[in-house]
Image (cartoon, rainbow, N blue to C red):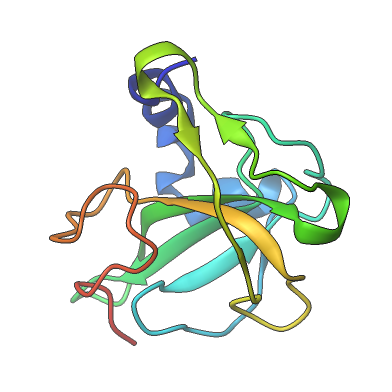
Length: 132
């Protein structure tokens, strides 16, 4: 699967209510350069269309808008960094890294800023345009 298709599949989460309806939980925290994480604990397998984390940012009107997603695999479950996407879009997860929010394990992760401009790149770990 490619990044363009992934972005299309995740469009439905522009509505944070849809994310909640689909089992994501609002952790009710904001992490500078990441945003507000919504986590789906049911997503335990690495799949392009089911990121474990959706990152939202507040608009000037106070609404939440989707900024990006994170796919991750706990570091204890693999010896090698996993890969995501196919063919020319293949990406290797970075890490291992410490968790970004309470209860997130040490992990290999890939942040995809599919809905928010990031001067550091679409798959940079942090997005300086997102502030709390």
